[in-house]
Figure 1 (cartoon, rainbow, N blue to C red):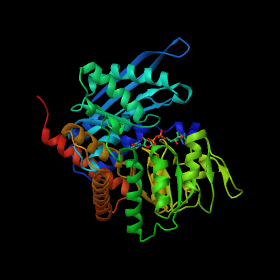
Figure 2: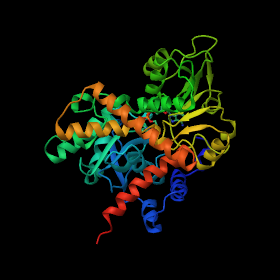
Figure 3: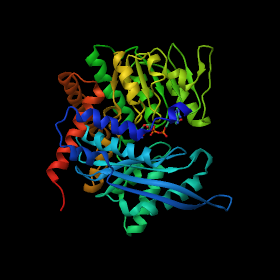
Amino acid sequence: MNSLQKKVSPLEVAKKQIDIAAKYLELDPGLIERLRYTKRELIVHFPVKMDNGGIRVFTGYRVQHNVARGPAKGGIRYHPDVDLDEVRALAMWMTWKSAVVNIPFGGAKGGVQCNPKEMSLQEIEHLTRRFTWEICLMLGPEQDIPAPDVYTNPQVMAWIMDTFSILKGYSVPGVVTGKPIELGGSLGRFEATGRGVVITALEALKFLKKSIEGARVVIQGCGNVGGIAAKHFDRLGAKVIAISDSSKGIHNEKGLDVQRILDYKAQYQCFLCESKEETEITNKELLELDCDILVPAAIENQIVGENAPRIKAKVIVEGANGPTTTEADEILNDKGIFVVPDILANAGGVTVSYFEWVQNLQELIWSEEEVLDRLTRIMQRAFNEVLEISISKKVPMRTAALVLGIGRVAEATRLRGLYP
Ligand code: NAD
């Protein structure tokens, strides 16, 4: 992240978004005030034994934003830049997201300030287990259910589930989602967010009367979200012309061999240009490529006021949370770029997390077809509900999604009333 991107606080962006949506919702000012605050925040500083025998102290966070519609739900990320305001913003976006797809969850997020790339698997396990113990008073299938996020994965979820189960004295699979299938994970969860990105991209193309066949796609980030989205765009006949990781990207105007590139990256943690048509590209250049669909699928603050005027994509589908600042949003809107906002585009993950939780609580196992069929129907319905608001209120898709999500959360909060 460069110094310019660092200046934009995700929490400021999230709060500005509430103000924008509030203009279209006739809400009591006191209710809006409640939504601007997170409900519960826990900051922990905890020791971890490192491989060299030394002890390091890490800082972690768990934040619940709103639980009016159901248990708090949201991922845990391991990243050096994690801080309280970022986790607060991400928790807020989780609340709106669950409401946009109309599933009975509230919003939460967690994170540990660390660099997992410089840690061994054993150190990551120790960190995960101790962090779980530190925040376990907030967790539980009825309370707060973590999932994977940046640099956490099904193995990390397995360690959280195991630690929580040891503390309880019995197995509690429903305490996390995104677990390995062997531990009660749902078929289709690993692919869900990437698939959801592609489902909403297809809906956007349908609305814009454009075809996926031959569409030029650029993807920032090749992790769980970006990597899976790339494979599905490729399978549908689109041309993925560029993809990146945190250090750089690879670009081929004629279309990349997605499977080969992702296999190589998985094995060697980098990209390899195999022909003269394939060239290295920076993340900054990648975002500004001329393309039909741009999928930011890495971290926040990637499309900002400075680079937004140079974005040439026709459609942006936000796989990442908060990749676009409010200043950039206005510029993209003026340029006529169709944006499928994060709280809609990447809601496939929380949707299948909900399916996983339901299966755990009811001790059911759904087939992959059943999961995908339900996911597709929910994502298509949510896209079209947001589109309808966007058309009827003449507002961009992001404002429409916020109006839908915040409106539902506000109504649930109002109906529950105020205790005492
Ligand atoms: P991941 O750890 O699997 O992958 C992250 C990717 O981003 C990697 O390819 C990494 O190299 C790249 N990256 C990291 N820092 C970068 C930087 N500064 N510039 C460019 N690329 C960078 O994480 P993920 O689960 O794919 O999450 C990606 C985004 O999607 C995050 O914003 C996350 O909050 C969001 N998201 C994830 C899920 C999910 O189910 N995993 C659900 C909803 C939203």
